[in-house]
Amino acid sequence: MENVVSESEAAPESDVRFPVVLRGYDRRQVDEYVRVAEKRLDRHEKARRMAERKLAKAQVPTPRAGEADPARGLGRRIEKILEVAKSEADAIKEQAREESGKILAAAEKTAADADTARAETERAAEQEAQLIVSRAEEEATIIRTTHQAALTELGQIAAILSELRKRFGGETETTAERTAEAENPEPSLAGSTQPG
Image 1 (cartoon, rainbow, N blue to C red):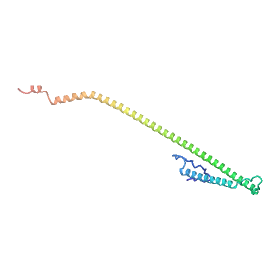
Image 2: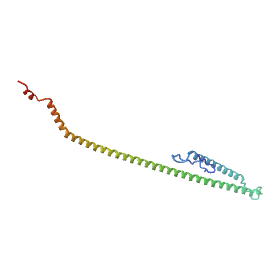
Image 3: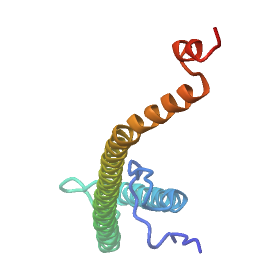
Image 4: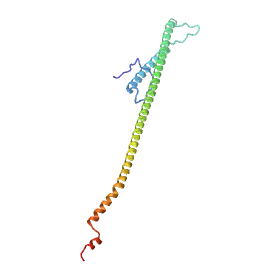
């Protein structure tokens, strides 16, 4: 749901710009707020200039001594017009000051909100990075432990194989030698059994 800023809520400041941030205000809404504020400022400025023109037109030169004042009857009326114009100009100036104060306060709040959002984003990113590093260190420790256990087990297997070679290797050679002797008798014994 998009909020549109009405002219009565906007404040006139043509040089106010809000930065575009990841988490912040809707850019179109802020631009609309500024556009409406600028229109109001233009209207107030036109009204001020019109009041000054009325004031300038209403001013009548004071008569010199001894001359009859042709506008003597108009004096009170002109004074009232001048008073009204002056009070309107003062009211316009005061309203412009109030609105510029509101815009300044809103801009300061926007900047503070942006700083808070940035700090929260940095804090979350740092926590996530620490979590990733911690998990990686845990996995590395598990891999090292598993690797060391495998090396220890391989060492034990190698020791068992070495022991088996020592124990059964010698008997295997003796059995092989006996089998070879039985199949191939020595030539000296064979020569003595032959008739001569």
